[in-house]
Image 1 (spheres, one colour):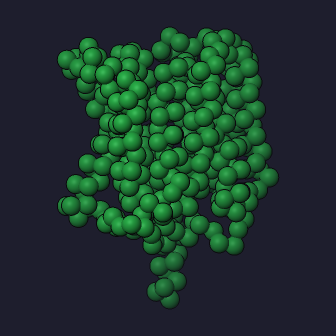
Image 2: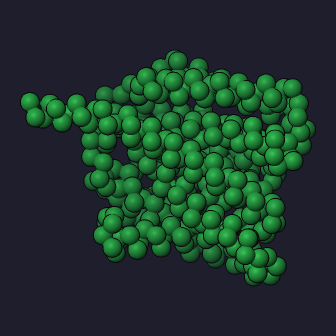
Image 3: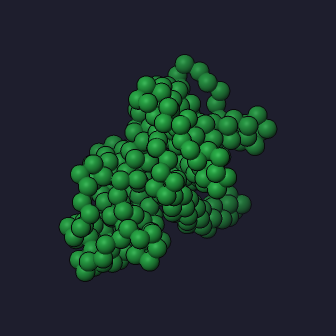
Length: 329
């Protein structure tokens, strides 16, 4: 009877964890876009790559100090870890760099609209890699989000080929990152913290070298705003939010599906688009764009309702949400 009561209690806690992890990810993702937009556009910081390095270094320091103080646990390094992680580190750095680059090349509203294409890519990769199956209601809600994105993007009066390319590449990397992260955060292997820590460790040195040889590092050292306390504060805030975003992404994927994590990001992005209409000064209004944004939001809210009902659970005999029963990594 006691075991049965524990199972009932765990079942009651699971939806709360799913909801809170999704909200945590949504808030972190919302804040970092705004802060990165300020650093890269308002202050004209010349190197998204170096900003990514700052976020990786912050992540490594926070997790390593936490491990030393026994706040968290993840496996010590051994020769099998690179094999366990591959290809996640390569996807991770591609996602990081393309995300930072795309933020500075488009207006906030159009950036958020084009990011919707991550959703069908994630759904497709979950079917191909994780063997998941989703209900028709979930697929239709995803289709509504994409339809809204097409309508909104079709009326973009500030088209930028470089900007669109950067965002679509970021979509591919984000989808792959979410699916492979879900696959590799098994608590019996590296766990949540191990995946984040070793991803950052493996990619920080190559990213620094790329920054140095492409001339980014020289541009950063010549940047005139390092004596500006407000800029330094925004830069450090971006670094901290970079860690929180990585952690919240893994946490949301751990308790939910990679698709749910992606849809939460989509809802957040539409919210930013609404804010961009009122502040920021870079939104060019058109009726089709506004209609498209509203269709995106409706699809996202519909998906959220289905998630609460549990209809986003994959139709697969080995449901990965059983990881909830072992929350410690």
